[in-house]
Picture 1 (cartoon, rainbow, N blue to C red):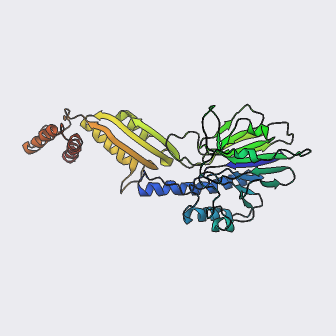
Picture 2 (cartoon, helix red, strand yellow; picture 1 turned 90 degrees about the horizontal axis):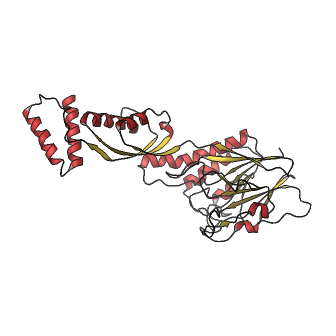
Picture 3 (spheres, rainbow, N blue to C red; picture 1 turned 30 degrees about the horizontal axis):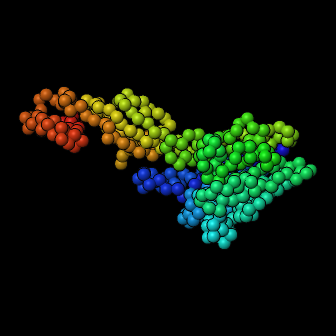
Length: 374
């Protein structure tokens, strides 16, 4: 191969996860910084010639110091010669006083091998065999085709040409996109590879086109429902430019995001046995009506999943919706038949109250069941 690059995008450092509790939010926010180390470690182990970062590296143009300082420290601790190129995206556009502004302590503190795309018409030669062209986003939204500013190939230029752009591709005719990238852009600009960012799923746009245009995905998922996230692209350019660049996706994520609905106690038992839960962000919805003894077992499984003061959780981060988990009120056979009369009266009263306040009555019945069982 003549050249190897690592292409990444959409780190979203500093992203908040306000739907989770404070501890879980902190873990997920820090995971976005921790993945940066794995990305750069992979670049080193693959001995790539350059690392290209295609925008939205920060979740905002002015992130808190914790996040830009963490990224800066990660870059500064490496004694490298290979160039790293940082492209401002629509979440972190090149604005006055932004994190990519020339006077910001993040940008001014970067080591020499890290290059910020700080102007239109950015050009970075990779030795004498390749060149990177890029144009930054200067706003959070726009209809400008930033790829149109990439220069055409000069006569006699045999170098590998790589474009670096943040924007959205036209997959549906007439659909409005943010910083649109038209079909056939890579071929039209006579590039050998177009590195893009914005979409969080790994995807090769126009896979049958002569030139690859690739979204490398967000290296850590940002929400439930995102598919094919957690990767970077490692791209190999053959010495013969007539041959298409080879693109491999490499997983770097620590977390798997998963949404699951359990409809029975059997589903819940099966979930508990999953050995991958420790590194899973799980949105669990319960939709089942159970007799008292099974309801009690389900409660114990849920305690195992989320952990307690005396036991570590089985699930890394758990978002639990138990509103659909109900107790079969009419079935209280699990109670001992020789309960004292006063407790038998309590059971009957709770059964009657379940018609008006089912959640309270069900929890009280279960609590009474636990006490009598103990």
